[in-house]
Length: 569
Image 1: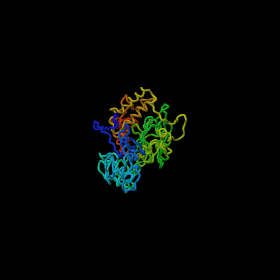
Image 2: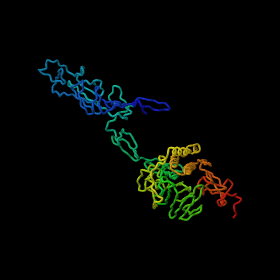
Image 3: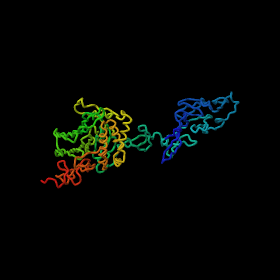
Image 4: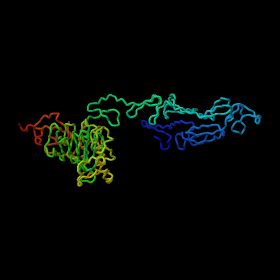
């Protein structure tokens, strides 16, 4: 950084100490000009013998009126004003600039061969630098001084790596390297490269060969992925990379979305939308219907509808399930197409094609897609191509500037005016009082407290904290909205094997039916009278939150009983 009182000093903070050094200037011309207030001289105009001269300016130096000089990008070139003389003997008449041929009229002047500069005599062929100007070289030729500016060769290093030694005209590399002829440089997209130098441009490897460049497609190394990963051609990457062999999109709160590729966005439309669908092979489609949540600003997810071939599965509030417009009891299956089970707080639909949908009956939706769908999906959950920057791709293929434009483009079906409104960009906390903002921050700060701290190493709390403040500033039912965000974060932590015991009677407590007790990590396949040992391959996951029978009890007809009380067949 640069101190505010001295922009010509650069400082570095290292291990708690500040070290400052003067700015290093690379000077690449013979007569640079230093503007007032600038740290380094510039090679645009010229500073010659104590005077400023504009670029392309022509002037006569004060100490030599017999010359005319030109300023060109920091270099000064001077030439004699005297005409050439076609004679052997020349003499300089006192008070005149130019010598004349000797003759009868001037024969009384003593003649001395050679050249004179500032009172100093030079013999024929002598070479010298006038006025200690290391970038001008003069030679005595035919009793006349012929002066020219030295043209510096291009150093084989960057400007920052050059140094102008005392008494020298041309900069040199700090680390000595040979000068390279101009025709041996390569110029590629505005950059300069040495003969034999290599560089990478996007997916090409390039080399400088004799003043021209040669580029060939990059050779990708053999890719070996870990278990649970698969190779995939990520956009804007040259070679395949290892990505998870499945992806997850979640919808939570008012509602907030985290796409398959990990991008968070908010969308408050209250219509029916495509959450995700196979845009290539049309193997499935998941639709969500959003409700206004009693406000004119935000919304929440009210219904999830899944289309698998000729089957339609509707997941409704309160864990009700319809298949092809008929209510069904869980567990339910259409083998081998799909199965539906109740797992703690969630209803889980698992399809044989590699799609799983979880629904908590209130606001939370999770869609898990197998890796075979990478790059094929579209909708509010994004395109699942491991590149979050293009997740706001609208139904027409263009990229939206706002999340609202993106969400509105995925509206589907008819629009009943009474309940459907377009989503708009809103910032709820900017339209409430400072007291309300502070209260939202206070309540949401629990996500950053010791209660949730064990999960911070596997799941960053910031996106959920921001979503929490958003909801509490807009939500008329603050307790319910707060609990929705906290339960979503706890769910994501549990997927990373971090179980949070966060609910209390005063914080999002859950009242279980008589004989049941709440557990954040209960069995996804509870013990029943029909199966006192649950086959592992039928369980959806290790554990789920919900109301369960106490240890030693089994589930039968929605009641917890002792195994000894199970009916015999």
